[in-house]
Amino acid sequence: MSKRYIVVCFGVLLFVVSCTGLFYWYADTELSETPRAASAAQNPFSARHPQNSVSPFNSSDQALALPALPRDERVADIQIDGAVRVDMNGNLVLDRHLRRFMDFFIGLAPGPEHEPAMKLRMQAVMEKNGVPSAVQAEVLGILDQYLAYREASEQIELQSVSGSEDIYAAFDAVHRMRRKYLGSDVAEGFYGAEERRLRLALDRQRVMADENLSANEKKRALAQIDQQLPEHVRKSKETSRTVVSTVQRVQQLRQSGASEVEVRALRLQRYGAEATARLEGLDMKRQQWQKRVADYQRRKQVVMQSEGLAPQDRSEALQLLRESMFEEHELRRIRALDKMAETSG
Image 1 (cartoon, rainbow, N blue to C red):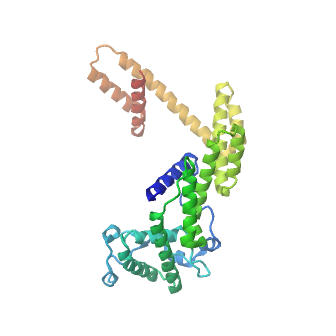
Image 2: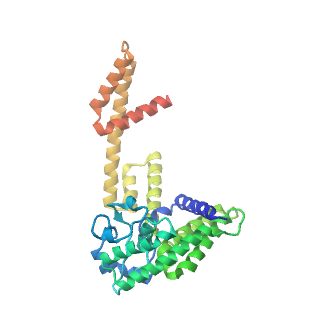
Image 3: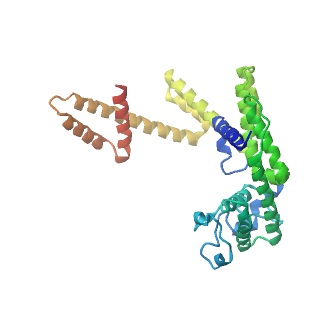
């Protein structure tokens, strides 16, 4: 299997993640960090220099001393992505910010012949931002490993595995290759959070696709997988489940003829007083809207049934009716409701 095969497999992986509801918790936060990365919260370098630093070689005198790169025009007057960060002990932080920093400059150099100029550019930025010389050397050393990994990933071939196991084989192969070329610390910092996210998504997908498991067995297996999620993610999922179940229960209560007192008691139990008050306010606004729409529909029916009106006159009368009953920001919504009524009718 070629590079194209791996790309397809990882495309499927990302699709699986989105379908299993795990994508949102990756966003721009990491699931966990290495000890070196964890101490970067008080990073003195990051405090003085934001993660996105303005390029120092676009219009300054330094541009005259630095070699050009083929894709310079693409980044003129824009911010550099990523950052080189050090912790309180002066150690380089191995994280996704560093990887993005490297990717930014790699994107300027389409071929190996441009790598020396690319490294000079990176050194210029690190020097300008006060990165210690020893850390600069470490960054460039990791860059060489990263470039070797990227080249290998374009040439890798995997033994073909039939069926859906191809995805798992691709994941494992890339996981091993990253540690082979980058080492465990760098691979973890660059890709660890992403890999854990994908692994959990694959585990969930495997459970959902297992026809030998009963519904209860799947539920228990998925619950065990969820226990591996970060605490803030677990709490978010629990909150979402609580909201969904409460909304469904409120609907059931109202359909069965329960009073609003009973609905309020349920919400107080599940959400607390503050959230319950907000929901009651939304209920009131919704009821007021529905009442206004019902009133509009009655008046619209009168216009539609008026005899002697030409089509143009009727259309103008309806437009005046809408504008007299609804605010500007509400007109699009009411027109959409009219359109839906015409389509269904």
